[in-house]
Length: 552
Image (cartoon, rainbow, N blue to C red; front, side, top):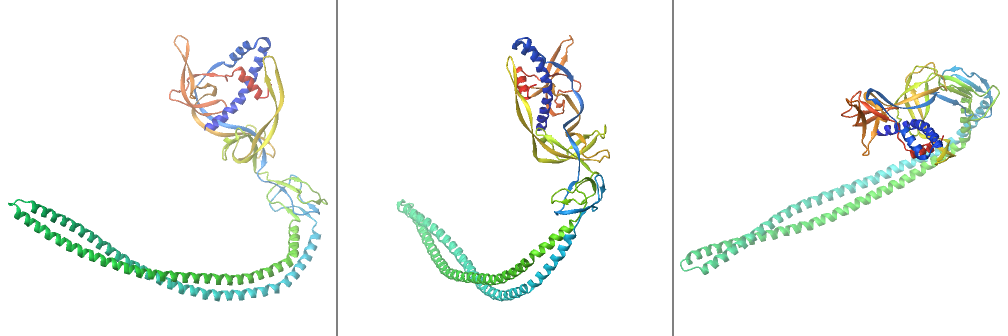
């Protein structure tokens, strides 16, 4: 949306430059009769004229205007792949309407027909001589393929046997590893029991030592009780020690079983690796056999292809000649590729044709489209499928409609001369410069064909960028941009004493057309009176704009 608004502002500024140039003429007249300072004041007074308008509800259209011409949707310059032949008849003239397949003109092809028969005879002879060589090479290839099949089958059987042995070794190794894992799990559990028993033993031992200390330091009255506690702790220590010794023995036994099974698994692993090596060797033998036999077959196949190539080479010249003459005979009669109107006939009977030259131009005059150019400032806003309003002199007040059907991806650059003007307090001087302007080709498909249209007629186009109905609008010069970048309209309020004052009303610019802008805002109402001012430019800005526009 913002890009569309910017593009439309550029267009409006171009129109405003006409007004500005008129203002500059008036300023220059003032310059002749007074000093620069007084002239600038007068100019600024002219440039700051303010009028009023109202906020109005209306339908708003944003569009790009251009001109184009009517062209055929289907047009073709007809040629043939012949040269040096004479035109024997011409069946059409400019303005004739023809159907697809209708004959338009013909050539004298008697020499081509005789040459074709001679070329066919030469081709038949060459084909017969090449047949035996190809058949011998085919038999050699069949023998090589049978040998390959037998050898590859035998090598494949060896691979299968080696694979089965390898898989058996893998299974044995996996079972051994499963057993090892089980024993390792048992050993881990035995180790845990040993460690727990050791902890219990250490605790019981510590308790016995503490009880002994209590007994030895006890008074005569407590001696008996402390001795009993000490004897109990001592017995518990001996029991914990026996449990620990038993757990330790069990762990050592489990650990030995793991080590024995690990040795067994190492042997199974070596067997598996050897089986794997044997299997991989059988695969290599198989690959070598396949490669050798394929090479033998490929050699026989190459011999066959060489024989075929030799046969084709021996017939190629004649065959090419036959096809050339057959194609020339097909081109001996020019027919219409589609229904249309003949718009040009460039040859007469007896003329000698040169390859590539246009014989007849055929155009479909029942289906038209419009071709136009759009400038570089507007092309970025043009999209396929956009609605287009069309006016032509032939259709008068009747407005045709269409849609954008094609946009060229590359530009057509044109050059135009303009005068570069420079200003001072006393004189204006100018020099010539060249400005490049890029335009882009578009096509517009008509929604409905019109019988009044003809090829190459001019057409005025209005390409609809955007259309809004029943929206609040003001002249675009009624919108003011503040220093912070926000936009407002200035409402004119009439006081009871007859004086007026203005109030800034915040607005958002939604869309701009050629003159009006669509706005929204919480305080905006239909019928509100607003201030409208012309473009406010300083003397220096106006002079620079004159320079940019090429002077007077």
